[in-house]
Length: 87
Image (cartoon, helix red, strand yellow):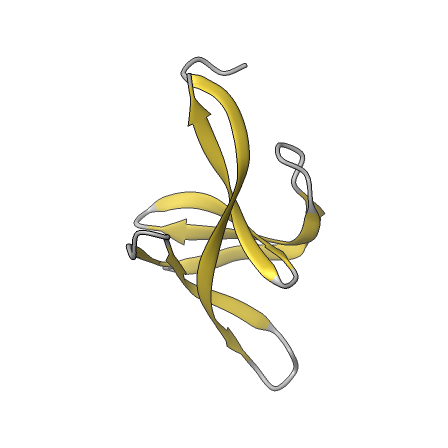
């Protein structure tokens, strides 16, 4: 257990994404349930993967948001992030 973190859980979010003619999906904005929007500055990597921390499998996107690297999962048809549950 990491100090200050009791657990992690799936936190489903709305994602605005672009879809090209070849079917490639690029996430652009994460929308939190309270309406806050986080623009994705850049996608660093996208590959099929499982979330080891909270379970689930699908596309894993490593993205940059406001200079910080984050992980976003697309577990069709839903998107989620690994939310930290504080101590």
